[in-house]
Amino acid sequence: MGLIHATCIALGETGVLIRGPSGSGKSDLALRLIDGGAQLVADDYCDVNADHGRLSATVPATIAGKIEVRGHGIIALAFRPTVKVGLVVDLMPEAEIARMPDNTTCVIDGITLPRLQLNAFAASAAAKVRILAKAT
Image 1: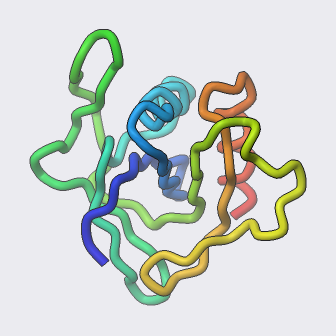
Image 2: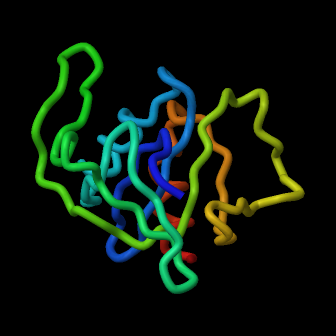
């Protein structure tokens, strides 16, 4: 498939793609997850490709080990260069999130993945991601 606008972290062996428009909290949520033990894969964009029935996310060399800290700038962090994606998180305002959505999956490059709609700034956001990533 190629380059997509998303931040990616690894929770153990499970990759989590965090998608959303600029300012929606992708890097902020990733930082909270990293602070809780996740690993950075890529911030703001990553390369995704179907690989033997799984979706792989890889960091482009130009941004490897870099993440934005809003209000401070770009910082360097340890990173994991690639991960198999097991969960997609789509960030959106709380008012747009269905309490009990009909569809909790999405398809990327022909691969169906579990999908969570989430307000990145909700107090429970990181906990929801960790719990659902374990369930994949």
